[in-house]
Image (cartoon, rainbow, N blue to C red):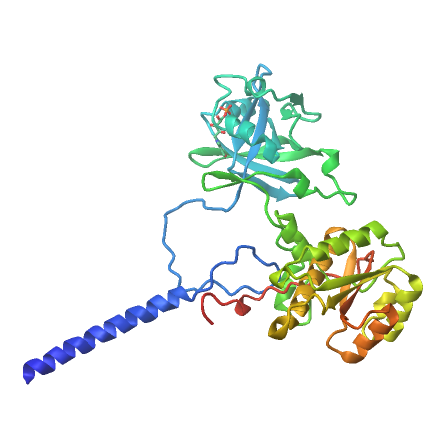
Length: 423
Ligand SMILES: Cc1cc2nc3c(=O)[nH]c(=O)nc-3n(C[C@H](O)[C@H](O)[C@H](O)COP(=O)(O)O)c2cc1C
C-alpha cells in the first residue's frame, strides 16, 4: 500500500513537471514572430523585459556604425585614404567630427604631419573601394592609384578628398585625445560638399539617391526602409496628437505602393487620360477570380456631366464632382458561378477593385472606392444612369483623379490582429 502511494506521488510529480514544461514551451510558441516589414507608427509592444540579456563584455556594439573614408596627405604630399568606423559627429558649434585612428596607420602619420583630413562618405557602389581602403595601408601602396579614384586637393585644408564620393567634408584638427589603442582626432569642419543631384531644394540630402553604406557586425549593408520623422513620431504617445504619416519607402516598390495607397477624395482639375483609364481597367482584369470566371464588366467614365449626376445621386460620392474620371466595377451574373458559389462575383470584383486602387497609386493618380452593391437603392440609381442590363450589378463606383496631396495614407498595422497558426 505504502509502495503504491509513493509510486502515485512520483507519477504526480512527473505530471506536474511535464505540464510546467509544456506551459513554458507554449508561451514561447505563441510569441508573435517579428513582422517581415516593420510598420512605422504603430506602437510595438516592448520586448519582454524578462527576455534574458547576456553580458558580452566591454564591446562598442553601437548599431549601426558609419563606414567613412578618411583622406590625408603625407608630409611629402602623397595622398592616402583609409576606412574608419570609429567616427562620428562630436560637436555642433563649431561643427566637429571625431575619428579614432591607430598609430600604425599611414593616415595617423599623415594627420600628425598636416593637421588636416577629409571625411568622405561613399555610396553603396563604392563598397569594394571602401573595403580595400580599410585593408591595405598607404605605407605599402598608393590606394588612390590602385582603386582608380581621384584625389582632389581640398579647397580649404591640406588634405585630399575622393572626387568620386558624393559627400566630402574638409576638417582641420582642433583637438587630439590619446585614449589607448587609438588617438581620437577631433576635426573642425571647414567645408562640406555634396553632389548637386543629391540635394533637394530645401538643402536636404536625398538619402535614397545617396545609398549610404551601413556597417554592422562584420558586414556592410545598404540603405533600408525609412521609419519615421524625428520630432514627429514621438506624438504616438500623446492621445491628442497624430504623427504625420511619412510615405513608406520600401525597397520593394510593390510593397511601397501597397503601404502608400490611400483613399483620395480631393482632386485637381487635371484630366485622367483615356489611356490611363484603360491601364487601370487592365490592372483590374489582372485580379484572380473563382474558377477563372472573370464575372465582371467595367464602365470607365470620363464624361463631366455623368460624373456630376453620379455625385448628386449617390449619397457618399460627392468627391465625383472633383474627380475627372470614375470606374464602375460591376458583376456579370451571366458569367458568374451558379448555386451557392454565385456570390463569389463580389469577391472577384473586390479583388479587381483593389487592383485598380493600387494601380492608381502606382501611376501617381488617386482614387476612392464608393460602395453600391448590396444597397439596392444605389444599385438601381447606377443601373439607370449607366444604362446597365439586368444581369450587370454595380459593386461600386471608383472616383479617380489627380490627387491634391491632402489625403494621406493611414498606418493600419496592428500586430494584435495577427495570429500565428491558431487564434
Ligand atoms: C570597416 C572598417 C573600419 C575601420 N575603422 C577603423 C578605424 O576607425 N580606425 C582605425 O584606426 N582603423 C580602422 N580600420 C582599419 C584601417 O582602415 C586600415 O588599417 C587601413 O589599411 C589603414 O590605412 P592607412 O595605413 O593607409 O592609413 C577600419 C577598417 C575597416 C575595413
